[in-house]
Amino acid sequence: MARKLSRASHPLHRSGLRSSDIAAGLAVATAGGFVCATSVGSGIAAHASSREVAAWLLTLLGYTGFVVGGIALIRADLLTHTLPNQTVAAVALWTAGALSIASVALGEWAALGAAWGAAIATLAVAFVCWWATAGALGGGDAKLLPIAVFATVWAAGAGAVPLSVGLFLMLLAGAFGLAGLVALIRRRREFAAGPAIFCAAIGGVALAPVLAV
Image 1: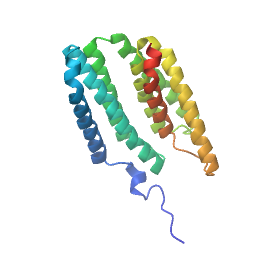
Image 2: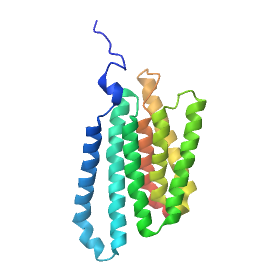
Image 3: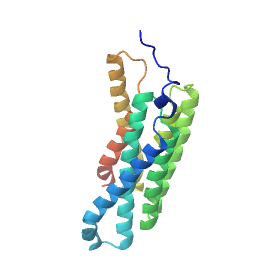
Image 4: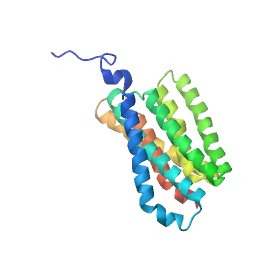
């Protein structure tokens, strides 16, 4: 019978993705964002100020990086049931940084404060849940939740914070339920929470324009 590799012995279980993989993914996000932006940038510039164009570019880059980084996290979580700290940090810095600068460029301080406030509150709640459940909620999951909430609330704007957070929680509950059902069918005692968190955030961002109306 073949020897079963332990989690510690498998290189993917030690670090998930290499730093070069993360850098390559974020570089692709940047290149893709600039290509898309320049393809329609001339049309935007004709009807918007330079600050609005810059904010649009930063928003595009921020969410493109969020998606690319999220895909990397999903891959790592499905393979190892861990979310590498370096990948989570890269996604958080990229997304929050680009979107924050976009808000500053437009002078939307209320939206920026709402997004950061929601993210900080989520981090506190997630940390308490991680501590209270003795690790049932993974440390990586607790670190990913704040940036997922940040991306959702920022997209909805300052006037829709309760609705955007409620929508995210509803989508998250549904994603967790679906993941749990799949794990039950496959007779597994645990499932990767990272994909559920990321999918809930993407759903929240996609529906944000409806909440902002």
